[in-house]
Length: 112
Image (cartoon, rainbow, N blue to C red; front, side):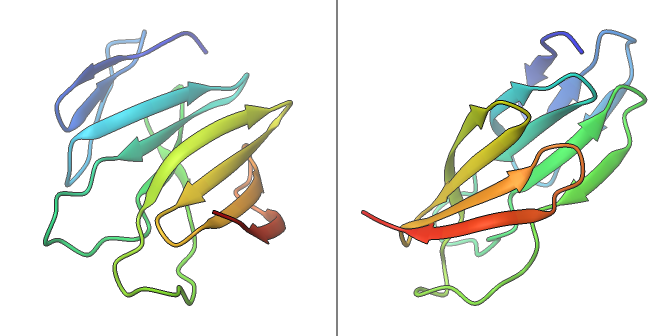
């Protein structure tokens, strides 16, 4: 997949297909079969599951799973590509390694 265009809450894929989200798109990371999309959740809104994988057809393949956090409001604040996996960083210090294609959690660490 090639780099999509971000327009506020919408990602525009090379095919022209669009995928809209409830909050603005903060960043995308490209992988061979999906792009990961992290949303910028505004202050005052609680939406911790703010990372999605989208395929080239515009379908959402997976969303980061709900889990127990240290703070009730702990959205993911960054993503880093590591080979075919992704490391997701959230507000309370969780570093979640996931398989980018499937969303399967591979490892969980805490840091800050």
